Length: 114
Image 1: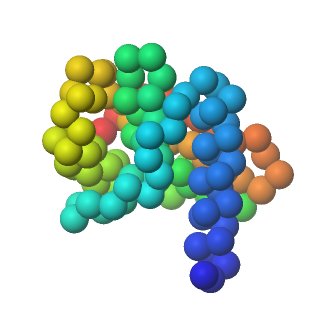
Image 2: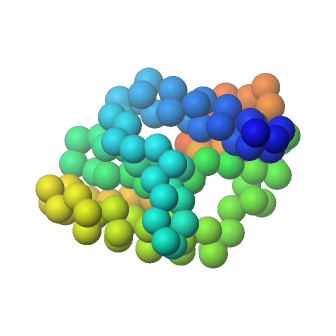
C-alpha cells in the first residue's frame, strides 16, 4: 500500500467514526461495482446514505477534489447496490461527502447534488 492509499484508508476510518457518532449504521465499505467504488454506505432511520470520502492536506484541497464525474459514478453505483439489496428500496437515498484534512475534525456535507 502506498502513502496515498494509506491516507485514504485512514480518512475513511475517521469518516466512519464520525458517522457512527452521529448515529449512522455502517452497511458497507469500499463497495465495488463495474461503475466504480462507493467509499461508505450507511443508514440512519429511513435514509440510505452513499458517502464519498476525500482526504487531503487541507479542506480546500479536499473540497476541490470533488468532481461531478465522481458524483455521477457514485449515483450509478448506488443503483447497482440498491438493485442487489431490494429490501433497502423503501428507504430514501442521499449522497454525502466527508472531507478529512490534516489535524481537522472531518467535515460532513449532506445531500450533495448529483
